[in-house]
Length: 376
Image (cartoon, rainbow, N blue to C red):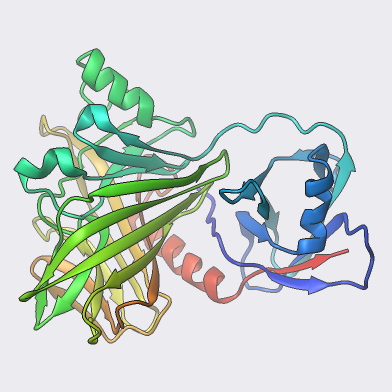
């Protein structure tokens, strides 16, 4: 599977033309960049779409390229996104042409699932995820992340829930497109985050509210709100905003805690289950990767599943504690902390453990060396 990455692009403005309609993207890195999401926020470029949304994006082979306009709650266009592939030490060009763009095949999705005890579920073309809401309170859920393995580019969240709840076809069994065999319990699961205070991990509970910012074919974004996060004898509120992008190896998470203004270290982590898998953790790179056997509820072996976490900010400690792999960073309440998390499967894009670990390392390298974008 192609290594894919979402980032804020480097915008290089070319001249003072009032009709910027072409985009040149350069890769000076040491490896090919395949199907990465580019995000453009240049006001002059976006103005073209404020005047008319009848634009087709084409590459230098005259092929149409799918794109998405990101709009705020007032309907104003904030960004233009599309996927690109750029070989190492090469440039590629795209241009806008007047016309009606073709419908875009959706590759991302997110929604609240009240019919399944208030889950919030989301996905892209690599994996699906869910987190737990208030209707599950009696079962002592955590604010950890559940991972659904998939082996299709199709969206599967709605289908899995419908067949589970209406047809009696369990999503804990692989019927050809994937399954949920990941166990979360009261843990961080597949990349959750929690305060790490007084040498203890303070795993939270269910979210209380949610907000969907947008759901689009190439990118979706939503927020979950936690009203009462206990840390020692104090309580905090948390806002967790997640962005899922087409082809992205990991989800982007923006975390804000509010409460007493004291340093509150945060730990992004991975639950290690029986701790029989392969763990790779690197403090300097801010990376934790875990590879383990995937086993269905019926105890049927289902290959290997993978989880990864990447923390761009300085990592104070990288450790294994309470059966979690943790990347701990300093944090001041009121600020926004950004990290990335996600999972994969050896039956969909990552045949071996080393393939997953390599993809995670490339993700981190891509973050630190974004492609250069020239708007003409």
